[in-house]
Image 1 (tube, helix red, strand yellow):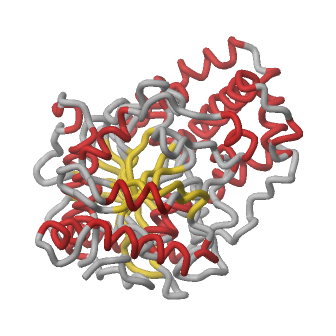
Image 2: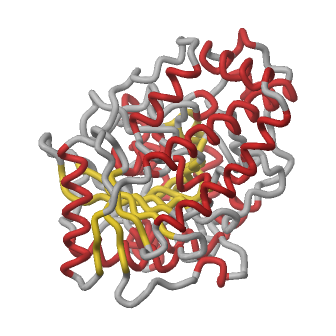
Length: 443
């Protein structure tokens, strides 16, 4: 298996070197430029940094930051908006990127995102498995880069499915961690009242686990709460999911049952999912309005849908935003009351496979239609964000077109490590993903 771990082992053993791998990464980015996975590269800086990587477990492995969320001084994120790129900068590396670098990861540049992360596509990025499809969003550039082998691992963020959707579109592993376990200091710019979490997209679960262990705070008890033995699982498939997506979740659940887990079919928490989507919309809308006004970014410099969403945020009473914070607590409580008998919930990530490029029209002007499309594309995705719960997206099987399909496993806050262990059981039962390209520089 090729992943960041095996690449790091190859570098450490002398089979290759970090500069050689970085050179291959930059060449792969050039060869696969039509995928639109990257928005900024700095070859000179990347090659220089590759000569002196940190000594951590992934020493010398190239990676990409996401153009949204935490970032570094060398590659400050600009949320996919050129007006932001002209005005944004960082005085210091974020704590998350300090820890990424301590792992030995070497940043080569930034991956493509939709403007302000407001879509589940990442135009112009394309899916390496089928370039007529999107790699998802908003971490779509990261997913395209990892699936295409430009890098083995990439930074990703998730405020309403933005790690899990691209993972499912591109046959990757992605964990949306429990609220608060991954640092977003010192600027807290992607906190979003606790909706957002950050970590990575990767080709293996061990890479995701290594990233989680390496970047979390020392209070490991926050992610090491355990499941029952055997684990008790609920299979919950929304009616609006296609047969391919439903079968993916059903087969994953059956595989876990075959491995000794107790699995019961339950109705999907669609009512809670709708409430969560409304909360996410409220917070994202208010956040965008505040962000643009603080930076004096005009409507003329942003897509029309972003301007319409920001206008909605400016009209929002403070009481509405405060009510959303109360609703977050209520939704999280209701979720675990409804599923009190279960350790985790298995469901599809997508309603009907990867969307096509341009599916989210950034020139449109209706926030109602835009947010409805988000929830229709990834049913109940915001529930994990609102509840502060960890949610793992991982590949399992293929659809009728031969594309990888993904499944989500959501568990209680603080059970991240137990969730990854359950995911590892399922990964052992799954057929390996046949990625269209090897990882650049991997011997």
